[in-house]
Amino acid sequence: MDLSGNTVLVTGGGSGIGLAIAERFLDAGSEVIICGRREDRLREAQQQHPALHVRVGDVEHQQGREALIEQITREFPNFNVLVNNAGLQRRHRFAEDDAPWSERQQEIAINFEAPVHLASLVLDHFRAQPRAAVINVSSGLAFVPGLFAPVYSATKAALHSFSLSLRGELAHTPIEVIEIAPPAVNTDLGGVGVHVHGEPVDAFADSVMQRIAAGEVEVGYGGAEERRRASRAELDAWFERMNGPLMQR
Image 1 (spheres, rainbow, N blue to C red):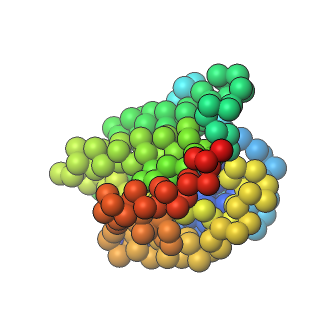
Image 2 (image 1 turned 90 degrees about the vertical axis):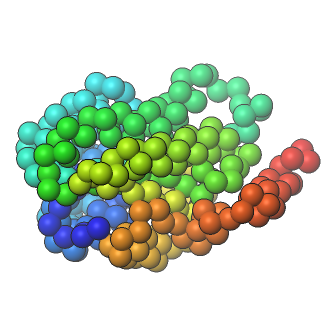
């Protein structure tokens, strides 16, 4: 994929992995729009990178997604790359979680429903572009789920499956479907301080974006790359290492 000359929308682009991806598209010579729920974070990102366009939007709900894509396609007619990055990770064991259903529903909506819906909304517009791409940010937990975040893991497994299906369906069109599977990265996903021992976000983003530019359509990093390429026996061993102590409680 050529990282230059695109018009890119990054959901959840105000910080973390989303902002890192936006920065690399911007540095390569693309026009970049970042969206998110928190205007203060978006404005902070824009102060660091004045060329960024920012749009406040909430992809949790159908109406918000439809309004966002209507606005972007109207204001940026050359829009050709969608990065589905917005995510929510609730770190609760399922059988012990007494939160109201609305909290789990929100996690499912942001992590899976939103990327599927947004992809459906952009397809007609992207078919008219000489080149286009849908980039889905999944997780190493798509391949080996974590008991500490079971619903999050399931949404990312579903997003991986959807990416495979969509890539197959669009194989004979100008639209690429790319999946990025991060490991734990030092961002605020899951809460401030939860991932301080994760991979550095810049090293992660440099690696995966270089590989995407080289033509790879499914890329991981660190432990997520090992899990992405693992055999079933290796995946079972990963599951035991990751979750064994939690299974004893």
